[in-house]
Image (tube, rainbow, N blue to C red; front, top):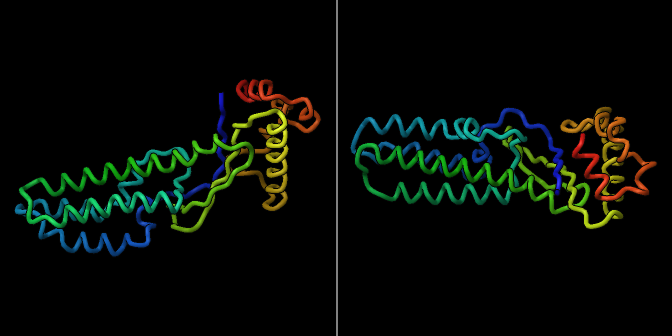
Length: 220
């Protein structure tokens, strides 16, 4: 069974990802300023305005991700394209009947949350298609700065590849400790190299097989 171990940069409290897109401020400023023209019922206006103002904050509340909220530029562009297209179509219509406009905003919001969740998780799962250390560039949703996620994939096709992958992982951890004076944030080298993981230590790598390595990792 393929195992996946992802090592990522820890993100602070994120605000929703979409606000990191280059067109977000312009688009949502337009949406907020024209919300009063979209409903016959005056009660829809403050409700819709609140939905738009709190869009990013509410997105983060609904993501419920246990991993750092970091998304690739490509996937962020895809999510943004969907949201802007749906919103522009909604705003092209004339005034709507009471309740319709805020309900449509909620529907777009929910679909956006789903797309962001899938985008972030899919990138992590794709690590299984690699053998050893793999890195991909992302944008941190906490502050919209460039970041990256480092993964260790177990999808190796031979024992030789597996040995090379583990050696690369141990070297990566060692170099990380030397540079930062500490272990990786999401994986303690002490836990990886503890006696319970002696099967991954250099003296045992020569005879390491996929089967006994997987058994060792699953058991611990």
